[in-house]
Image (cartoon, each protein chain N blue to C red):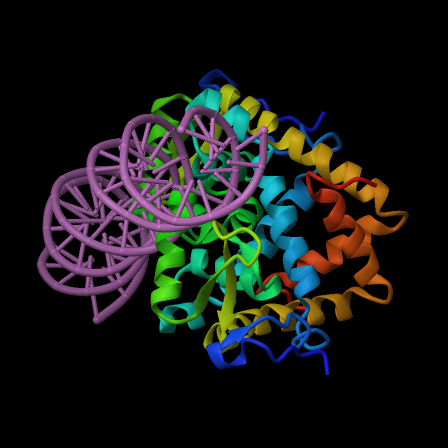
Length: 160
Length: 160
DNA sequence: CAATATATGTCAGTTTGGTTGACATATTTC
DNA sequence: GAAATATGTCAACCAAACTGACATATATTG
């Protein structure tokens, strides 16, 4: 038995072993720490711009898919339009993102990064990209494909 | 050239190709979506308890390292003690976590999950663990070791 | 022993980024 | 012309972080 029994009368658990073997605490925690430090990379740049992580995500996805509509963006971020509104408005007012009335459906607003928005998106992505490259290089050959498959499978809408 | 030139006079970028090859947008986005869906797993359980993700993290780490002090926890979570205070107080008042005065240093409060806290931690970890197991299985043999190395290397304090 | 440092707790106010609900406007579709 | 859709906006609210200030108990140090 791995269990310790002292403190049992207090309802205290001090035995970390019981769940091992059934629950994958190791990768759960690696994901937590890896993602925490990964998202910390752009913070210095964001602070200079006066933006937060919400702005980061918006600039990122608009830059990646130029011409996406507001509805597309809401679907990607899985937030409400009221949440998006403030952040998007600030990015438009600051000149990082522009809206263009949809050519087919004039109700739509197609979103584009400006030159400055594009530069911001790139600056934010750069340290993250470097971190990934280093981590993959140290993880050995073939790591990129394995990690890609793993992460894709972790997503809800994975088909295969 | 991959660039489109229309809209240039408006300062609009609609060319997603420019950065590819230098910035690893693919894995940046896979990480975003994978982590978003991964952290969504426990939400249903948390809602029943009336807790949030902050509570989840506290119960998780206290359960994993029984007897850790408040300072340990702050260092792990990288938040301020004022942020931790409310969440920790709620968990103590609800009977999920207990504090024990440090046997050597009586200023310290060693943290332990109660039986209920342990059950909660396990319930929260279970769907995440299942998601990981499925993703690893589909990612092929050897995926676990590669993913572990990759994630560990993504952390700030990775030595090797 | 007195002074200082440390671990923790708490009060008060602020910020970011999310939520719901209601309603307005322009445009498209039926 | 009526209904549905895409977007925007107002208002209130909430979760979870932040800063700054201060209190208490205990440990360490001069």
